[in-house]
Amino acid sequence: MPYSTQPTASHFIDGQYVDDTAGDVIEVIYPATGKVIARVHAATPAIINQALTSAQRAQKEWAAMTGTQRGRVLRRAADIMRERNRDLSVLETWDTGKPLSETLYVDATSAADALEYFGGLAGSLTGEHIPLGNGDFVYTRREALGVCVGIGAWNYPTQIAAWKGAPALACGNAMVFKPSETTPLCALKVAEILHEAGLPAGCYNVIQGMGAVGAALVTDPRVAKVSLTGSVPTGRKVYAAAAAEMKHVTMELGGKSPLVIFDDADLESAVSGAVLANFYSSGQVCSNGTRVFVQRGIRKAFVARLIERLKTGVVLGDPMDEATNFGPMSNARQLEIVERYLRQGVAEGATLAHGGNRVGNEGFYIEPAVFTDVTDDMSIAREEIFGPVMSVLDFDTEEEALTRANATEFGLAAGVFTADLTRAHRMVAGFEAGTCYINTYNLAPVEAPFGGSKGSGVGRENSKLAINHYSEMKSVYVAMNPCEAPF
Image (cartoon, rainbow, N blue to C red; front, side):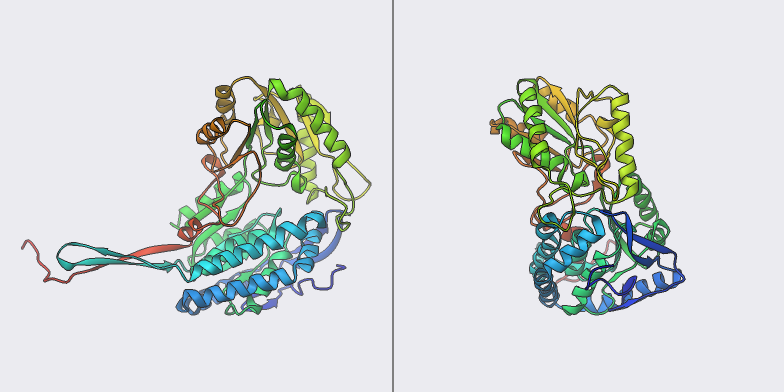
């Protein structure tokens, strides 16, 4: 692989890189060329046991430190990550195919934000004193859960590794993280940086593998918590397996989110929102607003301006060229899924108004696609595609838009563009979604909770709320008076 600071082995366990060549080979394919750039080995049972054993041991040492001490390590790791942002961004681009113009500003920087934010919170994680009658009282202790398992998706490998690791570590847990087999490299560097920053060996381990490795981690009795970012079908399986053993869970899953544009919206802003909601990261974002409901009064102008901007603004090319702003799909399978939905959309009667063509003779490139004349019952309007495919739907009234927006099993995100802020607040109050946007889309600052409702997940990533998902409260009742009983 042509990258000087690539990880040096398949796994990072107990503070060092390790390998077991008995594990199945996983090829790392650069999406821009379709060529193999690295190989890692899936974790064997011995590797899995080594990771969990070291995490269980290290967690006790880590939890015994003060929150301020733990926070200092996380904040030091954030500083290192920012210093190495370019190297980490290059690795992210090799891993995912996302253009460097994006990874330089979104991926490692977002991971560093999470480490800094939760590092700052770590020292403030305390309990409370609850006075009772006659001088008796209760105090609470916020305690770590133990060993947490993180399972990552392939679209934001550096960010997800930190979004899960930072709150877990802040609370005094250890984490064993399994990245997606499609993008196995970036999480290893997160682990390496955390260890360099002073994290005790074993507190953050990374092991590779497919579903079988994930299943082994999820069902191991040493694991107290499972956090998954992934598809809804995968989430259902992992949630069921974790629930069978009463483990804590956070599920950040997919969606088919609505973006509602009223005819009083600023046209340029609305088009920008739709672009961010559909085509950023080549459409590979779980919260994407891929059902774009446009009020009839602005629909014609919206579609015309959208297509004009796509024709003139999209720079599709070498991800390492910072002039490129639209990269390939992250893997061949996802490209095939996108192409299948494009065919299905046309077959079901939608109009492919722009794009959707394969580009080049190598790699996984496809143009951003816009469908018009879409109805709610079409597959492209009901099922998550996870690619650069926008469905434009017409609507007349606010009530209609809200009813149709909510007519889905998913509930990750929703957005509205309008000049009427009273209406905007009515809409977001009515959306059945965990993350909502007014006159913008797809922001995810670490300070705000992120997550879905209905079929799109359980729990929240980021913000102070994440602390509750990586810790539990112990209540201690203290009697200051003699204990009495009825007999």
